[in-house]
Image (cartoon, rainbow, N blue to C red; front, top):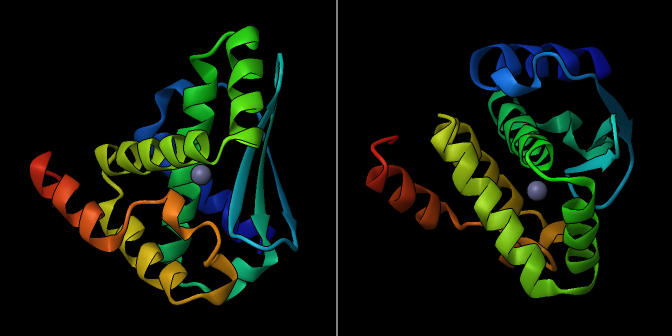
Length: 154
Ligand SMILES: [Zn+2]
């Protein structure tokens, strides 16, 4: 699965994330409750964690996850270390901050052109009981479609 993730990530970066092309990103596949997680350890360690639970997903949904995680990484790239520390503190302790960040990252994923992939992923994660507690942090399938239509990406 590691190879599959690296290949998909490389293709997405080449097509849609010019800022990340020169950056080294480590991909780790481990078991955890949700699908993906992005971490930056300033100044230059960038990690995308992908859950082994993702194995069962098709390429399209997998691309949705990876595009979403790469959006987090591009957002981190635009922060100073201090800004990022403040961001992490808020993200860890405020449910509201987590919701703002995840919905904003979903919108960015749509703007990058991965709306079908994100839509498919949202249908899957909504039917997955392991996601019940965090699902409100993300756009619903209807939100995704609405935002994509509004921005001419549907
Ligand atoms: Zn996220």
